[in-house]
Image (cartoon, rainbow, N blue to C red; front, side, top):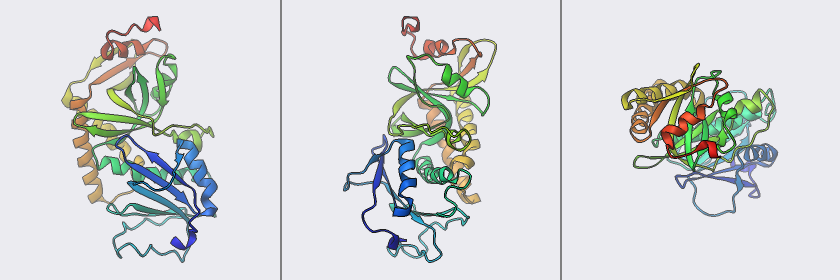
Length: 307
């Protein structure tokens, strides 16, 4: 793998709110693909030097590829072979090598699915450290973050789009929650992959941007706009059910032992989140002003009509 590198590769960097830095570099034949990847999440070019949590190196998939010699034999997590990519990594080593099939790189949206494959490694890291990706809309008000959670095709994106201009809209499908200290969590926007794969819309997300998480809302369609608080035990189970149902899509493929470990961690994260962050049931109509109900419980002194 390392023989494909000449030392002149461009490197991009992602710095998240836990002060961890993730870096991304690619061999020459994948440089335009990596540039597209970086543009999607608005990564900055790395200036060199400095410490980082992990470094992704994207190389061309070849039969003669061998694991880099600095790895102890057997220390790699064995990749699952497929026609498009293989990921070689180890939890205790900072280097992650991703082999991409350059012959099929742009087949039927696979350029984006390969990008998503790299994000799965990042998702899993934060699951192992008290956070998680959420299938949720991430919005902001008064410099605080709010998650709106709902199953697909139940009005989450529509509600996101209907919010008035004084609300900040960051991502309508995925968000990454990171543990920021005792009873504190930050939330980052993540790309909407269906924009690229299904709708051919080249949306961009400043993934480094983050806000402290202030509230979690579970969206339901209704004939009346209303918000009610969910008690902590019930909220924990609702968070867990949401995270568990998303884990197979958002995390790398795992064996049964790993799945049990991940589910245990997600359950613990759900209870910790439900203790630290207030959770609510958000009943919203198609044409009402549901956001005023959110403002009433989170910002009782905010006069939205004066905006």
